[in-house]
Length: 382
Image (cartoon, rainbow, N blue to C red):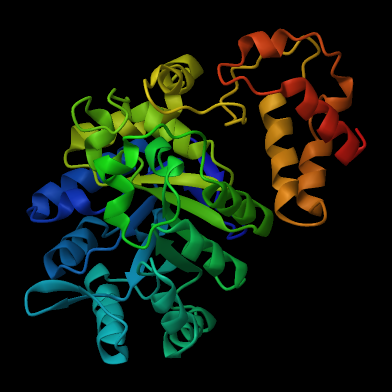
């Protein structure tokens, strides 16, 4: 397993982490098997959105003796009422659910306190304009949570949250299909077949801006729904009409700016081990570019998605990284010092491009790479 920095939190998290969907309705032994497999793979990041008491208790039991080895991301605003899940903004219910979560996990803190999902502007205004955000900040001040997170499926709302400067981590749904779609307050619309009947091209601009803004501001992204609830793995159910492999989905998500960890709701130890082996795969085995190129209706064209197929460069430039750093400068009116430093640390820079065109022959998405290198050289002066 390989590990990545989660934004500016200081947490070094596994590239693949464990979600809780596969624990719902499971026995204590089933949950223990999932947790043991995750730990055996080197997963150290666990996302718990579920308010179901049995899931919380079973996970707490399975993690006994391992608390210091894992980071727990628990959701604030997910409660269990009258035998059912309820997303709530009522103070009494929110605070009671948080205390219940800590008690059942047998811990006195969460590494990330995740504001349970906000997908529309009215909810955003309620959370960030009232008692809820004050409560979450107080939890951080008293070290009951170490970092503030927010989950969302709507890039417009997520971007607003990032721009407040109040969150450290974003839990966001990322996969190639979702990335083609514009912001929608009803998440179900992102997956509705009718929204894929006409050709779509490239990542939606607001999603693209969201990822770059997170990178520029040091907000780490934890990825959910990388497999589209499993539909992307099925030729029958995928909006693309062709099936992706799990490693393709993970790799696509992790090549987005600021993405550090993909959490999956694995339903068996076998699924955990399969996903946990991602870091050990050869680049050719997890390469998603041939798949995206083969999609019959929708296209990623003319814009770098950092797949790396442009390599090898005849003079050794890491073209994908140059493009990524250049793109990260486009969300504000100045070049962030961190981006400049990372660019300067590259072994070779855009100014060394000799315009030989080898990369153009290699690129599957017709990116005007030579123009991109000229732009980056002018911008960074290297």
